[in-house]
Image 1 (spheres, rainbow, N blue to C red):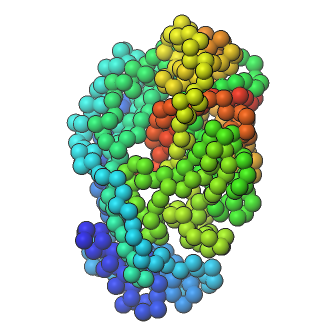
Image 2 (image 1 turned 120 degrees about the vertical axis):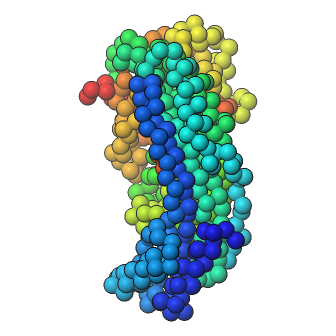
Image 3 (image 1 turned 45 degrees about the vertical axis):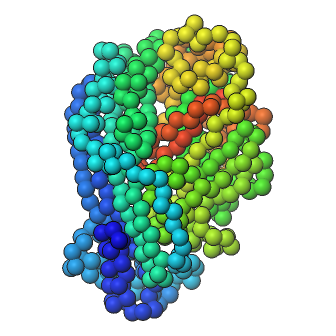
Amino acid sequence: MSAEQDLAARVVELVRHVAGPGAEAEVVVTRTDLALTRFANSFIHQNVAETGTAIQVRLHVDGRTAAGGGNRIDPDGLSALVERTRAAARVAPPDPAWPGLTAPTPTPSGPAVDEATAFASADERAARVRAFVDAVEGLEAAGYCRTAYRSGAFANSAGHSAQGRAAEAAMDGIARTGGADGVARHCADRLADLDGGALGARAAAKARAAADPVELPPGRYEVVLEPAAVADLLQNLAWFGFNGKRYAERQSFAEPGAAQFDPAVTLVDDPLHASTLPFDLEGTPRRALPLVEAGTTRAVAYDRRSGAEAGTASTGHGMPGGSTFGPIPHNLRLLPGASDAVDAGVAAGPVSAGVTGAVGDPDAAALVAGVRRGLLVSDFWYTRVLDPKQLVVTGLTRNGVWLVEDGVPVRAVRDFRFTESYPRAMGPGRVLGLGRSPVRQPDRVDGSWWEAPALRLSSWNFTGGASG
């Protein structure tokens, strides 16, 4: 039994003692070791690391539910946490929709943890930063390299328990020349798999290729989106579409059973594809959840409460804030194309004949080669939802946009503002190609990531320049 599992079991016993045998309780204990090395102006300016243990308790007693949290693991701290939670339950409103506790259920062990990543040193992260800075060859560089380790345990008063460990590493960096930026990102289970030199070279090549952009008129353009831009599509689809709470409130585009996407699109929320804790906040085992299969929407995500209200089971998406935001998939994969899914235009000619370095992703190069006239887009940012039901999103491009003519990026373009329905843009007949090699993109939240190949779409609605 791990230290976290022992601690969770002790808190459950404390709840029985304080609230009585009729109380229902669930406890999550998570130890985290987080470390971050940040750099700007091509030098490291911050190394930070923290280690801590967090305890979350949810208690249902006398028909009322309350939750509490803390980070003191001494006997007095644990007792105070349980007493606070019990006191909150006394004044909470009745909770007739309480879904009950997760029954004892086998939990998968999850992928193996790379110990070298879990407890990496600042010097090891700095070595990746050094490689990134050296590779940009005199351009300004900024970004971070981070490592994270989590050891977690769950216990409830129904006798269910689970434990797991997870580690991840991520690097996100830009290179800048004049007013042009290039970006490269990667998230992996092992720090050893982060190649700072390769990321720096890619970011620098894109920054140089983005110099002296021209202004193009707004309108609908065929696009090739690199994995960083596709990650924004996945994140918004997850938050506002495949969210069981929003679906129940009729605020989601999702229609399970309907062919809402192009047949090339298969989306899976697949937490155990990478190192992550194998259970959610309610102790439900995590598993792969097919959301879209060959263009047909199949499912949305549920926690225990939203699942019970929908007459179905939890899909393993209990999370902090779920009662407010709903259950959200956080490990979404857009599965890559088959051998014939990448556009046949790959033979049209070398991308290097145009703006050298514009294409930062090898798959994107194959897709670009089939474009007669369109845009290559590196990244999206500052995206905001205008219409959640249709998932119409507005946002900006960044870190490089290029005009493509006859399969070749011919010059850099100034950033655009866009307004587009993400599901419609990926709808039937609109996906012209998918890359074969997905790239995992880091999220701001540890344990969350978005994995996708490059994506070619028939149309994207650009509504103006970035300034208005």
